[in-house]
Image (cartoon, rainbow, N blue to C red; front, side, top):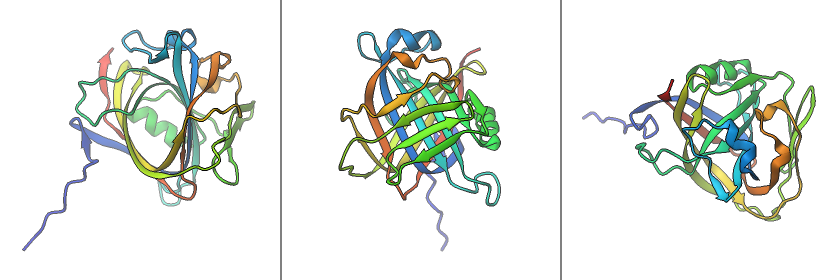
Length: 244
């Protein structure tokens, strides 16, 4: 008697093949309230910027540190800083309900292999920055990011009692480096998220944010943290071109 292994439920989504699978050991994702007028001009007119309330949009900054061995045996760990504006999803896409949808403004990474691969497969606005430096607090809940030109981003967790739970999220992302393109992403791991008031952060005016004037940021809206000592998996699926 022969048996067939069950199909990998992550192998496809909306008829699109899995392109990238990343394994990440540290991930802090912070969403900010920002003036709508500071981000709307950066978003293609075919996309709708999400407003929390009239005149206030959402701008997010993610800090990710990746495990060894993604590109060849024992290839080194690397770090990424990604900034993005929240936009409305395409609900006709056949996928689980999106948790969040982004238009990426800039991706900074200290791995040339990552920059090449993401730029070639999902068309991110990526830049190789060898001097990118990410430092985490001892508890793994806070981070400071800089490069050779100085400080970029700092955020500290203010919740005194994080409770981490197994989570799975799906979402969409849009890029405009090779025409307007839509993609699908998936994330699973143990995370904690909160909307507690937090004044312990700093965004410095820097090209790392892809033209976003961070002086227009008002406050933290939400913070998500991967449980220290665990890993998450992030997957990206084939892109779909919407406009030339």
